[in-house]
Amino acid sequence: MNSQAPSNPSAGSCAANHLHSNWPDATRPSDFTRREASLTKLTAPEGTQTSSSRATTNLLVSVRSVQEARIAIASAVEIIDLKEPNGGALAPASPEVWDEVSRLIAPPEHSRLKLSLALGESETAIELADRVPPTARFAKAGPSGLGDATELSQLWKQLRERLPPAVTLVAVAYADSDFATTIPPEQVMSLASQNGIRHVLIDTFGKQAGSSVDLLGTARLESLAIEARKKNIWWALAGSLRLTDAEMLLRSAAAPNCFAIRGAVCEGDRRGGLAADRLARWTELLRGRC
Image 1: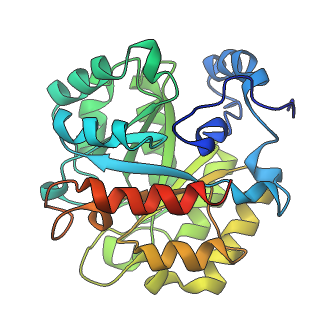
Image 2: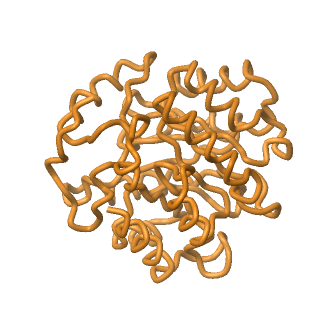
């Protein structure tokens, strides 16, 4: 992939220039089109980053409304993710909110932003996939209850058949896979690679057992990071992350391509409203990595 410097730097966040890998999906021709259009904007693929280039880490913030999306936009995050935190780990916001936020970020001044949508767990996700706006960049579905690779591969196949061609499917793994009755993150990452999926999110299904860092540990996260680089997979880490978790991971070999957060930047817990001052601490931390 072309490694020249990005031609359109963002004043709001230097990390915005390295948003996503955009590796082509072997079964989705539109991904090849997006790759060609993006060649001059991207640095080397995250999956082959050196230790110095790995210093750039993106930020995904989950919001539930247009009002929260405005706060995220003002904070210069790279990815705005829509979900309803009261409904579960990946519970979807309403399609009406999808459309409103999609229109909100449509103007050229927001061209650096990418929209991500949580579709819910498997059955709900399949029902909603064909309602995803074509302007979304990412969509993801939870694997809870899918206890083997065949079931999960089938879910991904059904979602890809229903999603708009320009929307990239993100494979989801749960750090608390036993509690979610699904396969562990290592197996999800390997299976995603076999299915031509180049984006993986590691999250937590339950929100009472601790963070993904607590559940997986640094050594296991380092192994996952190594596998992601070997397989040219862009990966994001979510799951009740604290700012101290991010600070620790950024000093280690376990740093993901993206931190995905909600509760850490809300008043109270993840069900509270988005707090601009808390979000600012995260953006300041990641800007310091540029």
